[in-house]
Amino acid sequence: MVRKLKKKDIPEVMEIWLEQNIKAHSFIEKDYWIKMASEVEKEIRNAEVYIYEKEDHIRGFIGLKNNRIEGLFVDKKWQFKGIGKKLMKKAKSKRKKLRAYVYKKNKDAIHFYLGEGFSCIKVQQDVDTGEEEYLMKWKGKD
Image 1: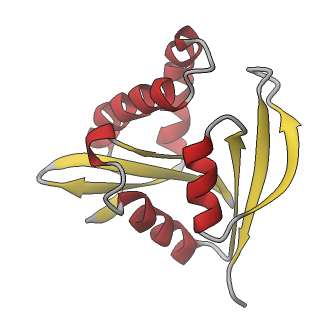
Image 2 (image 1 turned 90 degrees about the vertical axis):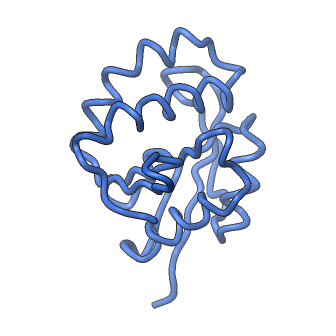
């Protein structure tokens, strides 16, 4: 079930955030993600976040700020089971257009976003990590 984030969900969401960032972005030092965790937790408290919950556990989440997807993460044991698609469907139901920044080396994420109808608009360098990233955009039907 997809529902809005509650304050009590934050520790479990942060656990997924950290584990999945380290796994998906092995080309970035693990310490970077550990250092970013407290800042991200503050951001999550102020963002529009939806979680996918099953059997009283959070299996994934998507964070939105304006029309930007701040992050979409699914617990490793639950990946490739349609949870990301359900979370994206929720985001698309809330916005007429969306954008996301995706590291060029994160092939699984790029494949997912392209499959969801996103287009690569430009390539740029992430100032924090120095890694190349794609700006990807999606526009719903008018």
